[in-house]
Image 1 (cartoon, rainbow, N blue to C red):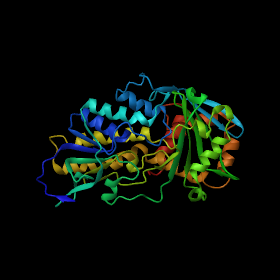
Image 2: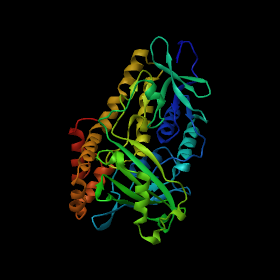
Image 3: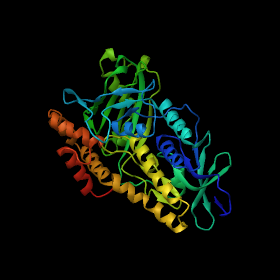
Image 4: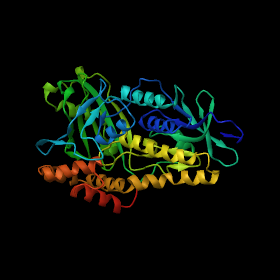
Length: 418
């Protein structure tokens, strides 16, 4: 849809999608004094497929935005419990200057609602039940100047932020398709009433077997603290078996192999098994084009090493907000504004590009027969190596930290950007 340039804007910035990426973007924009319209297609509270686990990287973002993580419902954890190769051991989150030394668990049933409310508190205007169907384009420049909705309305703004997830209609409407040379994952999860609900550690299982085949991915058991545990699997498309796996059946079989006292049975299931795609390593680019800014899953900002998306959703939202705020300052000319916005993709590449490339190499390697088995068998027995792996997979380093921090940072710096 195209419109004349004379139409009055409804906001400085429209953010489409009130998940972690959209709400974080809206929060930072509103706090900077911009008029922000946050559009969400569903109504809160609403469910979202997720493991519900938040690493220290995500916790830092919540703390920076003033979210009250000491309020009821937030469950703290000390680190990661790793199970595999006949071993079971616990790795505490590293002690770092940049990040807290604890993680959190909160279900997406109300996590996203808390994030959206935080954006509203900062000054953003939230509209729920508004299903955005595509961009509104200027009839001369072809720039995005707003969005259309399912009920036939149009909302206009100076810049539009796509925070509408993996299946982003806005990016597709601008011709931005997924890159086939980037890994994709799938996550399936459910909830069980279980005594595992108050675990102090996030538990990951590194051996997922489909009969005789060891799959690239992991299983998880994350205690929610309310009498239930989030139990799920994350799998990568880098193995030959990916397209032929019934993920829901694999999760059922995996749960049946667990100790009976954990209660991972059909009668204890409190929610259906649901799945979602995990777009990784910047699988949709560029992250800015003609007035449209991509954040979070819409731009494939998921860590290939561990499937973590919430931290990067919030971080890319903050970065995008900083760029947009500079671009919309009163003293900037249209040409300066466009130059500022066009620098956003490179800013993301500078921040994450090399690290995401390391992640791509990692998932390609473990997708090959025997590599995952070799790594599990020979890596897990070495605690020092596993502490290094926790930092690498979680992207948890200080800029001037110890030797392992320096190795990871150096590798990220020299790797080609994603």
